Length: 263
Image 1 (spheres, rainbow, N blue to C red):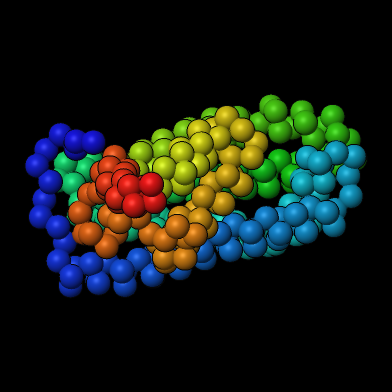
Image 2: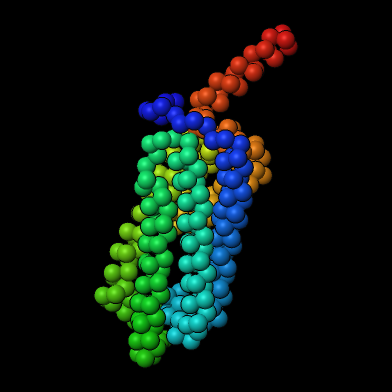
């Protein structure tokens, strides 16, 4: 597949070795981001389960009022995970740019902007929900209808809902865009690229979008470390773009002599 411009010279052995060292650190950041997200889910879930209430929202509001610190710690873990995700994304964006001269600079911009948008939405959501929790408890805190009404009619909460949706769209576009370019260059397998694109779209459209993304992030980090079942794609060690059409053609050339001898 043509990239539409003359490919740059391949990275030299020293540059590939340096990239591999950066990759080990970036992959560690990706796996740590996965750990932070899981820790945040556990902390949030534990704090909410300890609170009683007639509905999930009511329990969450009671939990926020009773143990705001636990939710703040969980939020800190989420934000740390997003920062580590940005680190991994910047590494992939640089690896792509080192192999194609016209890789869009938006890959690097979005690697920072997309996680930052999600982090800002999460922070705003926690602050707004904590304010609703205070009013819910002050009003008695024993009605599911009251919890729903307070959350639905709160101006800050309405703004947060819009902000969360917008941040998910930006994040999904970034993940999908990154995967498309990484597949074009040959840094991600077709399977992982399609998985990532699905995770990007799923983050906006599906309740399981976050789980899809986190599983993709962990898998991509494992691939960068070289522990993926099929190994790292050839583009990593070649230091240049190796489109999958080229890989497929090489596999056919290798298969034909073997098939001929076997016949």
